[in-house]
Length: 172
Ligand code: GNR
Ligand code: NI
Image (cartoon, rainbow, N blue to C red; front, top):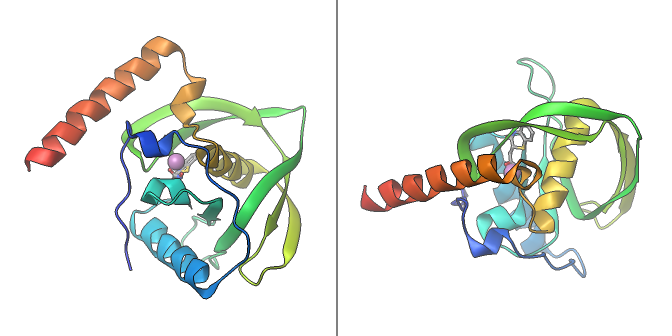
């Protein structure tokens, strides 16, 4: 089932999400619906607060090349346990901030620990687009958006555009 994605500004996107206690079938279904919503958008990641669920759950798949095997990842309670000194700059976008893109600098490599859909603890190192995306998604769980890294003026400009977009969407 496809779920509606919240558009910034929305107070639900600014809240710190709550850790998940144990992995139920209900949570697995939610994760599957998030993956469906993400692929449909299309996007390379999605965090539960974006669909108005205040839980520490993210999904991602940064395999974007045609013909390559997809790699859907479901992460409950994901945590960055180590980050590289070296940084990367990526042009980021967000499904909650449609059609707005800006360069954001983040650690180039991160080690992430999480609980998978079977309730097992996992840890893996990510680099490239995967590293950027997983950090962007974990930020959502802490109520943080990529525009929070921009200069206030640029952030305000984008926020105003989104207010206008939401007004137009409500009228349509
Ligand atoms: O689809 C998405 N693309 C993207 C591109 C660069 C950096 C981060 C992202 S994540 C984004 C989907 C999204 O909003 N996830 O929260
Ligand atoms: Ni996002």
